[in-house]
Length: 96
Image (cartoon, rainbow, N blue to C red; front, side):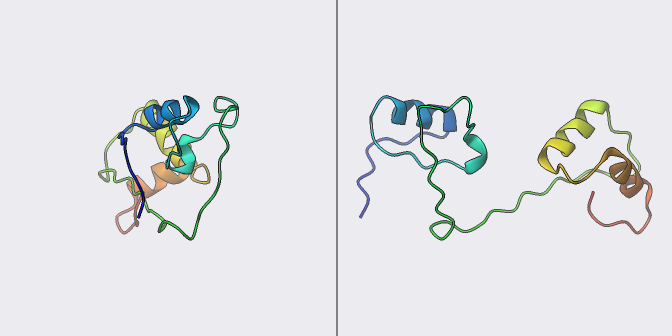
């Protein structure tokens, strides 16, 4: 049974606790930056937690500003701006 003495919602707070030597932190792998978190060690535990799916929904037929395209491309690097625009125009298109 784990002995949880501290909890925090923000990954940066958890990483700060670990940096201060207060124990072990559990954060999503996307919260770990190899350059910024040089004093921390990332240990992958894929069998310990189930995978998590995140979806982005956009209303078909709307205009997306450049920052929205940039955000989608950051989350889904394999999806380019042209495929996003194409999906938004499509009548029968799937998720964008």
